[in-house]
Length: 165
Image 1: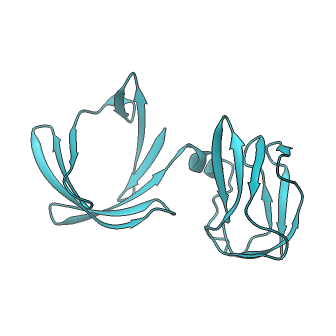
Image 2: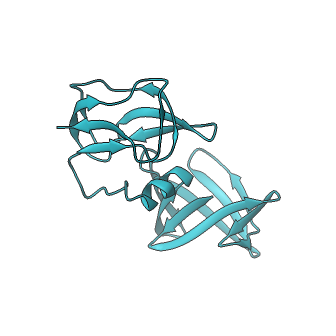
């Protein structure tokens, strides 16, 4: 499942039996990429040209221009939604304190070591859960004070992984 927030309106996007669902209703459209930043869309017998004006792939925020109107699109995947549900997405906090496992899994790779300075959005580690590699990113700025797990360790949801100064 994917969640799209477009100009402060929220939409749930999923796929069932090879059909796209928007807010659990079938969504029919024709979508073609014309160039790197230009797209052609047909929806409800209406034709639209769309342009990708700006893209922040790390934050999953995009500015798309359709008919001289800029739409801000913020996408959230399953991991983002799970972290949000657990209250880990609090981006208002600029300084890190602790990192706890957002879900049970296996520490596949540590990307930082004790003493490293990290900035918001930096990848701290790779956690494998449900056969998927999840890049766990810093929610704010900080310095790694201690690491409580090692590569190859299994962790439980909520288990302390790192502390920050």
